[in-house]
Length: 181
Length: 181
DNA sequence: ACTTTAATATGATCGCTATCATAATAGTGT
DNA sequence: ACACTATTATGATAGCGATCATATTAAAGT
Image (cartoon, rainbow over all chains, first blue to last red; front, side, top):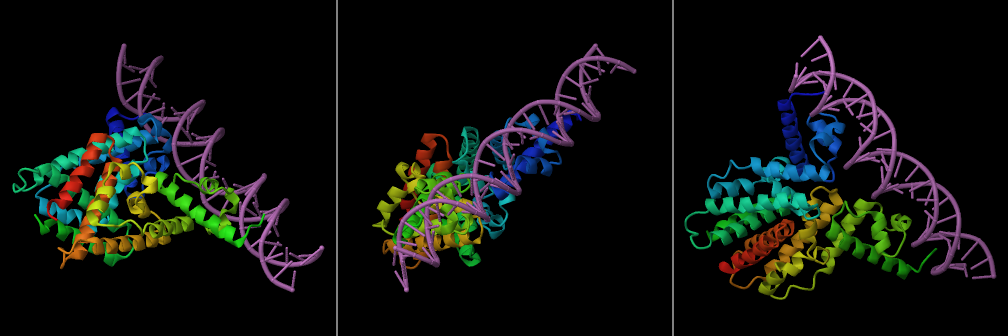
């Protein structure tokens, strides 16, 4: 059955939103096209009217996720607290796209990697502007280092099995970062 | 056909070595049991004489990889240089197991996560002992923060598509880490 | 209103992979 | 030597997922 052009755009938006959420939660491979479409309230066959392939969907889902996360920021210390919180660790589906998918995207085709690259670049830029004025000369370096440490700590905390060690990784990394700020 | 007990142990060792290498290179999902066995010079059917399942193999492969990487260390600056080098970035198959698989292991069953947790714990401990004496009071914190930053930078550098940005992430993170050491 | 066209639904196909049953073969112990 | 047993090889099965052909339905345009 046919739907309004507006409805179709809305459908596409929902496909992207659900795909982005599911990919972050379960990884690219564990989520099938059928599951994404079902989550969006559609059947699997219609998928190829919206996207050329699952690879194509990955790229657009990354782009979509990176684009919608522009709000937050605020000041840097609060951002770090939230990013390195147990709540964020326990919610990959609603959390940072890069932390959830950056390692995986290494194994994906060009388009997905390009979308991820753009997202990483803009995230670094956002961090640069959020840095306090104390980092006059080396904002760029500070932004990259800080970002790498945040992301690494979150990935480690999510990989680890023992809650106490996981909490420790988050808390110690957080404290380490302000030790010399 | 039957083989010597020693030959069998050797076969198992080769299965683990090849699995570890292939998993790091292509990720768990992209590597099938048949491919691992073929790489080890055996046929796919014999696999279940060595391991209970592919999940079982993952756990043992992680353990195997973490155990064999005990050598290196040396002093910390050299280790950081090597870890954050383009050569290491471009060789996931021969490189750090955690950087290659930590993000993926979040989605795997207990056994694999437990093996990864042990590996991470021992890596942190090794970093603690490698730290210069200057970090008397807070070796633990410094080790965790440093490790998170290393790992995060390597994952980002591998995710990114543009060589210049990738190189930059490695080099800037490396410089950032000694800025206050 | 009526035709055309575009979006979704249904169902099938194809290939891949983990797993396992069975056969074949050669160590191991007596 | 011989029986026994353990390891590997061969081949089959079952299920899953991406993709696509076709049908259906309703929006768009006249």
